[in-house]
Length: 101
Image (tube, rainbow, N blue to C red):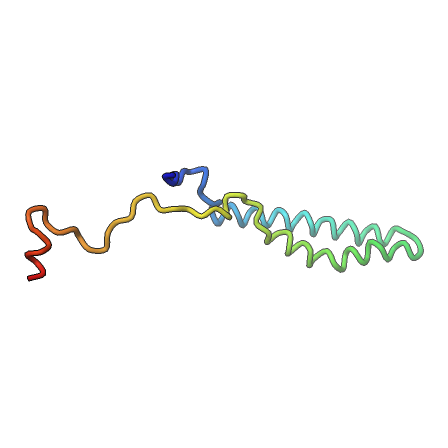
């Protein structure tokens, strides 16, 4: 079966767009961390420990989640469409046996 040619929909995200997506994921996670800290200040008693523990471990998970690629196209192997030879082909009028002798 002939491999399909790469198209624009198979191309990975641009580095700027990928960075933007990672920054949004990380910012949302850090926003949740701020909410956890505020909740820990408002909740009485030992219940405040739950949002504090979440606020402590959330930065690690935020980095891991932000760096995981969710682009399904990234795992595909792309076959090149046209491969150019390293050396030019021999002229059309010459025979290879004549060159080797």
